[in-house]
Length: 125
Image 1 (cartoon, helix red, strand yellow):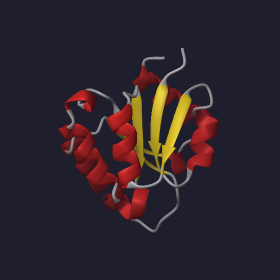
Image 2 (cartoon, helix red, strand yellow):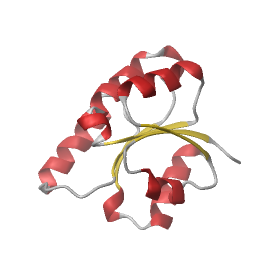
Image 3 (cartoon, rainbow, N blue to C red):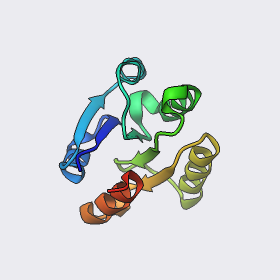
């Protein structure tokens, strides 16, 4: 069953492949994301760590403050390489959960099929 997914990330090519079976809407800025969220409901929201100059947490907080999106699963993802230590990734994951995110996935460490499976489990597909 095709699901609607809002993708807030600058690196959308891989997510387009991973989620090709679903209806994807891409946004590049926080303002675009707010406008998209005001206009419709989504089955899933995916936010990249580097979305709109690292405004992932801003968007996550915004989503969780909106009554109509409070129950929508939100996955925060790492889609590009950046210098980090394991403790930094763990810190991001803890912060995502503390702010109400459903999951944090390091897509750089996952094959497309594995990423698709994890995301579709959250979608209930």
